[in-house]
Every structure is written in structure tokens, then in C-alpha cells.
Amino acid sequence: MAAERPLLSVRDLTVTFPTRRGPVRAVDSLSFSVRRGQTLGIVGESGSGKSATSLAVMGLHTGAEVSGSVTLDGRELTGLPERELNRLRGRRMAMIFQDPLSALHPYYTVGEQIAEHHRVHFGAGRAAARRRAVDMLGEVGIPDPARRAGEYPHRFSGGMRQRVMIAMALACEPDLLIADEPTTALDVTVQAQILELIDRLRHERGLAVVLITHDLGVVARVAQEVLVMYGGRAAEQAPVDALFADPAHPYTRGLLDSLPRLDDRDDDPLRAIPGSPPSLLAPAPGCAFAPRCSRAAAAPPQERGRCEEARPAFAPSRGHLVACHLPLHTTAPVQGGTR
Image (cartoon, rainbow, N blue to C red; front, side, top):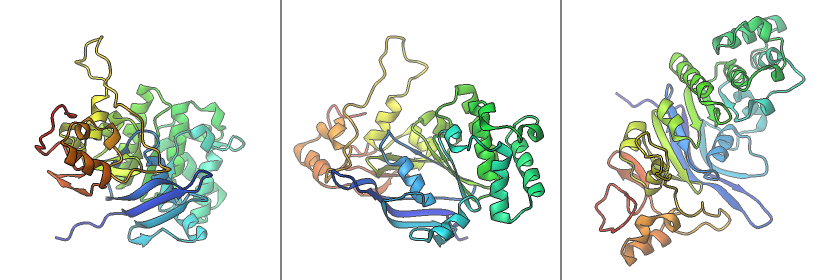
């Protein structure tokens, strides 16, 4: 039986921004794919290229040089005219942004804003579009949706505004949903509700979901596959259970070690990754994580030199894809390295 074709396929995606100090390569030769009904979590520190990737998939970068291939259900999106992209945004692919208050227009009711999507993409009349808006508000769990559709965004709490954004994104039943830090500004109870909602809609509608976050706890809750980014590059990709149980990249291990644990003592400090993320103005020729990697620092000079000078391939390692010369799955003779 032939393998199912991915709904979203990204190959060698590179995003470069011009600046006064020189070009900044925010995303560097990134590749991944997402199937229908699957959630891919993309994680990494701030500046790792997560949001730049999501905006490139949606074709929302202005003034940036974007190269590589992005296909949606087999259709190439890179280089597609803006008019064609506008037809796809909302109808075939949609995005939830981090701050719903800034994404919603303060002068229009939430019902009007949701209905507008349905009218633009389906040519629906005002009454039909209004009914669709009310139905969508009810589907995402907003009480008394007919009344609340006539209210303005400032009348909604942060969690309810995020539900409105989800309703707007899904009003035209897209195949792909990109959620960029959708729960960052929410308390833990509301965060859990929003994640449960996204996961339920994924399951019911067969959505392909790309979840952008820096929170590994969020990824563990809803993702089936995880892509770890560092310095604009892919560091590791694996099924969520395998990645948490047996990470291959020292950076992934560092992220997991920095999480608070229930069995930690009160006086145990959090274990931070030393150093800072790399400058993307002048990326190092080798592994982007090498300057912060204790495993590379403790390696023999020849191995350490390879980490610093040669870019590692994104290659299989015990069921993972990992870009590392000294993955944790190997028995390299390293003393005192990252465990």
C-alpha cells in the first residue's frame, strides 16, 4: 500500500531578511512534512526560526527572500502570485496568531469578522454568513453564540478571544491550521481548554496542524511529531514519545533538562543551557549549537573540530532525525558531556 502523501511538504526552506548589518538567515534549509490528522509541534528558543517558518508557509513575509519548496496537497506555494495565495489563505490554510486582541479589529463585532471570511471565500450572503459565524462560535465553546456574535473583541476575555480566532480560522474549513504560540498569554486552565479544543477539531475534521511553541509541555499534550529548531536549522525530529523518552540531540536534552520536575527538591535550581543562541548575521560554518554544547567541548580535539567546522547532516539515528556529529544515541568517547 502506498504511503499517504503529506498535506504540507516543506523542502529546503530558507528565509533571509536584509538588514543594515547584512543579511539575516532566519530559516536555513529546513525540511519537514505534515499529514492530514497530524499535529507537528515545532519547538525551540526565541529566535530559532519557528515563527519565520510559519509565516513563510502562509506566504506572509514582505521584504524577505524566500527560497525552497512549500507544497500544500501537491501544489507549490513558493513564488505563487499574491492573488492566488489570497484564495488559499483561509480556504485551504489558516493561522492562529499569538495575540488575538491585536489580530481582531476593534471596530467590528466578532460575528462580522468571522462572517467576512465566509463571504469572501464562498460568496455567501450576509444572512448565511452570519449564521455560519454563530455556528462556529458555538462549535468552539462560546456560550450564547447568537448574542455574543454581536459583541466587540474587548468584551471577551483572553481565552474567549482565542476561541474567536480559532472560529475565524476554521470558518471556511481549511485543511491546514498553523497555531503560533496560541496559549502563551493564557493561564494554565484556559491553556488546557484551548489545546483540548484544537486537538478535538483536528481529530473531528482531519486537520493537519502545525503548532509553534517554546513550551515542551504544550507539545507533549497534543503533538504526535516534534521538530526541534535551533539557529534557524532543524536539530531533531521524532515522534513525541520517543523524543521525550530518548532525545538524540544535546540541545533537545538541554531543553528537557531545563523543565521543572515534580520530583525536584525545593532548593534544586533549574538547569539552564549555558550561553546564548547564535547570531544569524554570521552563522558558524559547523554545528550552530557547538559553542554551547558540553558534549562537543569534552570531545577529543578531532571530534570537537568537526563540530565547529562541518555542518552536520540531518540524518536518521534510532528512529529520530538528528543534525549532530555526536548524537546522544552514539557511544562516542566523551567524558563529562551532556547526558
